Length: 247
Ligand SMILES: NC(=O)c1ccc[n+]([C@@H]2O[C@H](COP(=O)([O-])OP(=O)(O)OC[C@H]3O[C@@H](n4cnc5c(N)ncnc54)[C@H](O)[C@@H]3O)[C@@H](O)[C@H]2O)c1
Image 1 (spheres, rainbow, N blue to C red):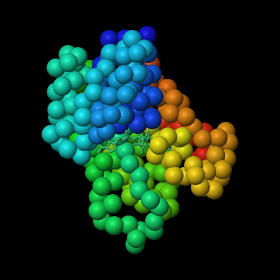
Image 2 (image 1 turned 90 degrees about the vertical axis):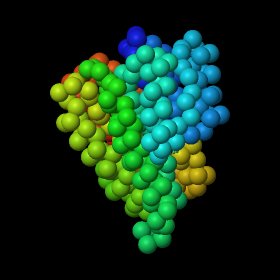
Image 3 (image 1 turned 30 degrees about the vertical axis):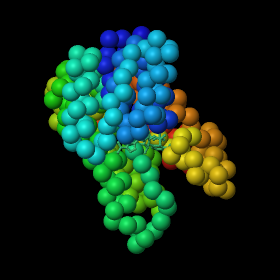
């Protein structure tokens, strides 16, 4: 098994990509702390892992809260004895609008969750991690190309890529690897509104593979980056977009 005896924290693990990754990790022998702000959704992920014979527990965590994040790390170590993998995956988007129409509170909320949440996760987890540990932060292709009408989201995800590079250089000597993923459009709750609009058919064909991605396809990439198979990869952002950025 590719993550045998490993322990992971996955934030946003009540959501689609987080849940798919938690299930995939558990299949590979990893014990999981399922962290999310939504209790019911997180508990459901734990139930699914246990039904498949895996080990997991839920820890309610608001990634914008330093106290919650510190607790998430401490409870994981109390429960499973160590921490090998952190997947900083919790994130939100807001409705499309031009910059003058973005409220400061919306801007700050997106930054708080998508960027500060990643910072806080690393701030509290890294001191508890040992040589061989791995962190994966969730960016987006929006953070690479600069997506119109999604300025806050774009800025937060672009910053995640830069923060990932900075962290990888700070902790390389300790053999703690830090990478990011940049998904394209993935069929999850986050894009539910787009599914009911005429935008969906355009999005579905806006890449080389001419379809949207699946949460399981992100999970497999995160599995690779988190495993020892990626032992010489750090500071990278893996684009998983079906070829969107090449069109
Ligand atoms: N779906 C896509 O097309 C897509 C594309 C690129 C990047 N992403 C990124 O993937 C990640 C996962 O998103 P998803 O598509 O699975 O969406 P999702 O909405 O299904 O999952 C997001 C999860 O984050 C949790 N969350 C939100 N705010 C939180 C907070 N303050 N504290 C803790 N948890 C919180 C939600 O409860 C939810 O379970 C996000 O970072 C998102 O930006 C998604």
